[in-house]
Structure formats: C-alpha cells, structure tokens
Image (cartoon, rainbow, N blue to C red; front, side, top):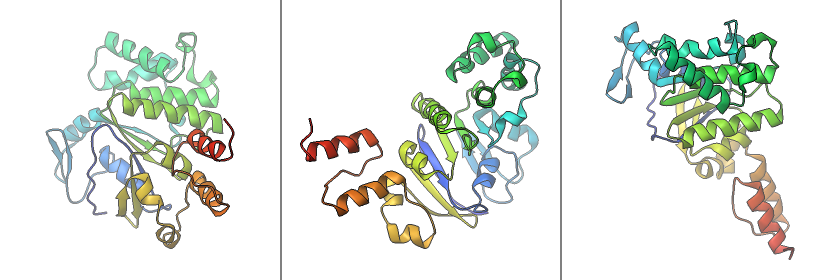
Length: 260
C-alpha cells in the first residue's frame, strides 16, 4: 500500500471505503503494529521507515493509541482500575501517576469509582467497551485511532461513545476513525479520507465528499441519511441549508411552514 496522507492537528478524520480497501491496515501501520515496507511516517520530530527497529516503534506507540473494533475482548486484569493502569505503566509512567490517569479517564468515559475494584468481566458489554477505551485514553495519545469502535453497541451507546471521541479531539487531540456508518462520519468529521484497493482516492470535508452523487454511486458509497432527507425536502419545494445537525434542519423546516 503506497499512499500520501497529511493530517492537520486537532482534527476529527474519518477513513471510509469498502471491506478490504486498506482502512484497518492504515491504522495498524500508523500505530506501528505492522511494519511499513516503503515510505515514511512522520510525527513530531520522529520519522518511521522500513528500517525502524522495535524500540523506535515503541516510542511511536506512546503518541498513537489504537482502539480495536472489539476492544473489550482485550481486557485481562483482575480489576477495572488495574486494566486501565496497564497502558501508562507500560510506557514508563509511575504507578501513582498511572492510577490518577486511569481514574481520570474512567470517569471521562462514564465509569464511576464504584466499579474501579470490580472485575471487568462482571460488567455489561457497554461498560466493558468503555473500560477498554479508557485503557487507551489513559496514556493520553496525541493521535487516537479508532477501528469501528462502536459497531457492537446499541444506538444510544454509539452516540454517547462517539460524543466522547469528539470531545477528546476538541480537547486538543487528533482522531482518526474507520467506520462504515456514513451518518456518524458526516456528523463528526472535519476531514474524510476515501480508500479503495489500498489507495486514497479522495480526501476533503464532509460536504466535498458527499456532494457528488454520481461519484458516490460510481464507487458504491452510501450518502448520509440527513442528506437523503434534504434531497426529499427539496423535491417538494423546501429550501434548506446543507447541514449535519438535525435540529438546525428542523428549524429551517418549521420556519418555512410558519411555526415559531
């Protein structure tokens, strides 16, 4: 896979494309889980290439965290707190500081102190997912990579976790999300990367990516539901602003039908 990918700091980026297009491979290469065979990865003052050793890849992983699709399956410790502390300790942070970070990020994802000493395997599926996410956030990576992290959750759980990822980005970090859910991609992203056969074929804002219906049809990509809804409204005479916010859209509609 040969590609050029430049990302701005403190942005929410989504990678989309069909199964087998190279999305997960891209995240694993960024995190140093698989070695690149050509090219470079540049982050801060560090450059990773085909000759980089495991020590250098370990340093890279301090800055890039990866949440897998079924991250809850990676829980292993006998308590929630110990599980989340593992990441910071593994990267050389003291036990006391690791405990502070674990408590901070467990609360961030909605896990209260009453669960800290429980076995992670006694929690609900949604709680286990949150603990696993906290385990990555606890070492506070500059770049957070997410490989379909909410695919196993119900709609309410998906929304809550996606809002947490957006807040993490807004607090000064870069997020890279792999997803097949175009509604979430459109709503949360600043930048979208489209992949096909291991290559980036298009990159840009949500509006740029989703405005060309013919291009999307050609590449068999689905438009977000809200844009389909806007198309239907325009067909019956409404003039509405392209938006990713349903409440703004409803406001436009109500104004045009004279409801205050």
